[in-house]
Image (cartoon, rainbow, N blue to C red):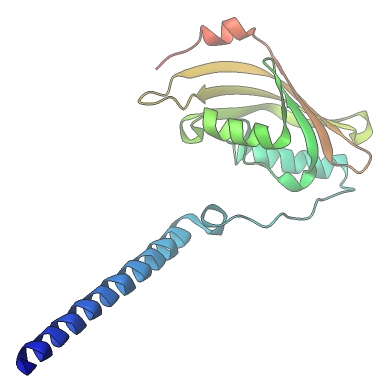
Length: 190
């Protein structure tokens, strides 16, 4: 009987040790995966980003430079990757279809378009108007919709006007398209 109990105890210890080892491997595998994702994508994608302080009181030229970078480098009309520090959190984004609060514009744009397959081109330069109260630019873009299996693309062009509040933050975003909504939809291609 004693040998059997000793064998059973040894087997139980081995099994629990094996389970503990498997649990350790599972936890550390997740940590390793999270670390690899962080290295591959950078901290912005892996963790929620701390809000950055708003950049109030910038000149119109300073804001225009930031908007130019957001448009040309980050393709923000198709990606919603823009410098949030120059926008008021209550900014309303309006296009030819509807108006969207700040957070819904970001979430909707990121869900609706495939940024890597879309192209946004600045036509001319970003202009400072009305003594810096407005920033305006023309754009020409091809937007790839994020549909399952296929990403149909539409083409459009237009003007975007950004209105700044008293503190210099952008409080209104208004896109005016050169084409009607039906004309834009007729440009759809795969």
